Amino acid sequence: MSEPIARLHSLRSVQLRIPTIAESTDFYSEVWGLSVVEQDHDDTWLRGTGENHHVLQLTRADRNGLGRISFAVRTRAEIDEAARRLATRGIPMLCEPHGLETAGGGYGVRFVDPEGRIIELVAEVHAVKPLDRDRAVPVGVTHVVLNTIDIDRAVAFYTDVLGMRVSDWSEHQMAFLRCNTDHHSIAFNQAAWTSVNHVAYEMASIDHFMRGIGSLKQQGITPLWGPGRHGPGNNTFSYFADPAGLVCEYTSDVAQVVEDQWLCRVWRRVPELSDLWGTAGPPSKDVRTHMAGIEDPGAAADDGAPATGVAS
Ligand SMILES: [Fe+2]
Image (cartoon, rainbow, N blue to C red; front, top):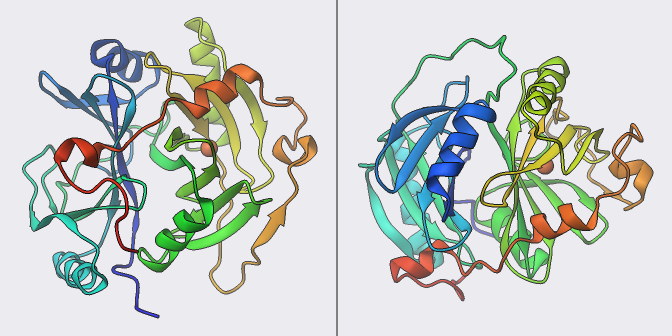
């Protein structure tokens, strides 16, 4: 078996393609608690209080979809090596390693996963100073859940090519993958079509988490589902719909994995394990509909790149 193409350091940012750029920019900056770092006619880049230049990029599009998922890699040399390994594996790159001219800069390489999602590995992104951590606002993005039409193929690609490890399964319905000590940075959900299920934002503590929910409530925004605590990952959850109808989550306290000491298990999908506190109840039809979203052919399709059938 070949080595993974790189050693991922962390999930760095997510790009969402939406038709509601103005409303969503207002929501994420004035309500959700992120801060705008750059903005132009078609894009907004937002940060949390953590060390990432930005954690969310909103991009104007005709319909909802996922843009890029960016992972931080430590060094430029590792990006170059990732490109060589992609070539060896026959996985087409959208672009060779180069200095990125988008907000935050950096040196990166982009390629496409088997379902048309654009993956970016990036190093040397502009540094920013962390902001006040007392406020009940997100530190950054901590995980993304992706709907897949073939969970085994998706897990195989992300473990084999990207070196992620499976932390847990929720029956054969969801798989939780890690790239560092966080229990999951990516999770896949077997579904009828490919789409983004939700994006989760880390709150610094359970107190920040509850105060954040309280702040949203004061502004008339109530959760689609939550608050509660999940079994797999042990993280708290509270899910909301953004102006585009995409699901965003406040979460905290995700389980920390010690490599070689973690036993991957298969969780049963029963209410007492998906909602440990018993506060949230089962997910409603409404939250399920939002999490299913609409079929997403992948941003790569717009770039004229292969959207499917990429060798893995
Ligand atoms: Fe989540």
